[in-house]
Image 1 (cartoon, rainbow, N blue to C red):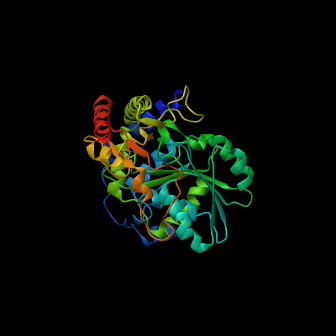
Image 2 (image 1 turned 60 degrees about the vertical axis):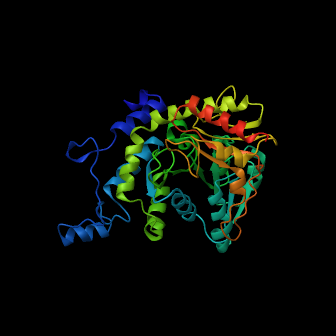
Image 3 (image 1 turned 120 degrees about the vertical axis):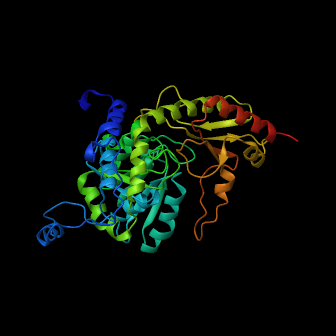
Length: 390
């Protein structure tokens, strides 16, 4: 049945109905347990030998977590997925499963700041080097890939929202024997399915649109069975960044409305982006949906965008004058948020934490929530007025 549906219709069917619910429950119960017992020693021995597959300990497997992982794998059109306690848990776990001391990573520029810090702090201690390239320059990527173990992608990228040719980049990684990973948190599996474009592993900060309610911190990675098995057996049990049963239950709840919420976010984000593009105090808007057509691979857009003010706008006054947009990190929930580049550029996160984002201090990032685009635009207009002159 699902083969005749569009990708977006297929996503709606998966989030609403896929998965077995005990006791015919519409909402699965929470298995808030640390362990599962065995009926006999023979059953326990068979399980530990790998002859039986069943739940043992919630640091490694749990019914709620398993249902969430199954849904993500199906949404991403791939074999399997493994949940983590945060997006950074998913990023670090996926990367560390495939690198050895002395390896090289190729990463697109404008990546998530804490992914950058992972590469430039912890991994450097193991003599792992990272080369940063313009993801839209395929020749530069091809020149950097020989000898690389991983190609780390985001599309769209952080802050500058650059949409990349994911299929071409995945093909380059494959040609050079590198494992390709992509952070798909911005588009979600509703609007982009990188596995179908040739990418090996797809990572999500599930705290964002997948959770959708700003009440859970989690991550997940999806991909081919042999790759997920490697992460699940060599990294997940030992780093301990496990996804908790209640958090998985919240994520399953979030998935139920993901397609509907993404369509609402898309409409609101585009409405605000277009109005910003026409404002005389705004010099540039970064949103991949503003062109005449969507970039290759994207089926739609989310509501995270950036823009630049001209020099007449006092950015601290602008941020303080906003009422509906709140100053805060993260994104993907119901609420609208603002983060000026000035703050992130000044972040002190320990040694080697400084980042050359390649973005100016006049840039501001918005997450457009679900309060209604007209009300949000009124809030922005008022704040701009308060931040100019006097």
